[in-house]
Length: 337
Image (cartoon, rainbow, N blue to C red; front, side):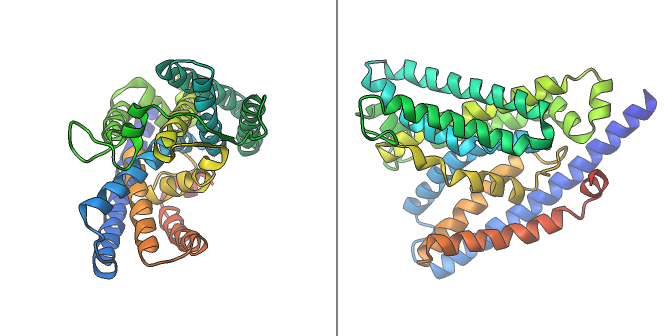
């Protein structure tokens, strides 16, 4: 037990150093982007642009929460964009049937969680093919939703239904929170962020995630069920993805199955830029929030400079390569490889 305790202490110390390093790098990138934006783009730091950045960051941040937890145990959830797209058209289709909006939200989020649990269980059992498994689950879900929504319609990928006013206010650019010109989704993201960060460091479940990601042998000796951890975090990922899909309906005003496509790349990018190891055991959601802000501010800057979507992707890709190179120099990743 003494040796095991020593290993845990060393692991926690390594995680702390790496997290501090990633936070410093993240804040440095964010500050540099803000300075560049102020210099190169007129009105970049205006309240209107700041509100836009926070709104878009909230959507990406909510979708990236599950991806962060999965990465912390050495997994990646590639079903996220498909659950987002499926939820985005399933929710309005349920409204069309006469289901109350509050109940439709609960149904969609629970369904997303169930898909995530199934995804986590299957991925854990077939870890050698976990990425393909999560991709297949995502395809199956969005395909099934499209079949359901296409019954009696020729447009299975697009659903038109009146969006509840409360949802428009909750997630639209002109939404207000207690009279302030700030969409409520931003405040909700802040509260979820604080709760997640607290839970990761102060609950048995949070410590179990770090334990499984850091050393499966040590986690097993502590009596931690790796299966339960995998299924739980994938369930959270599915629920958050479904919630993001519902909220995006309030932002766009219409259901579209492809609305989640950009999140396949950006959720992973946010995790990497934040410094969470894709091999597990290091990082956290606070670092991912920094990655989300860096990505969103960078996108706003590139749009302000008039760059195309393809150019934006190229630049973000060029950013990820050196970030991975920097984080990969830590002993934790080298030892796992």
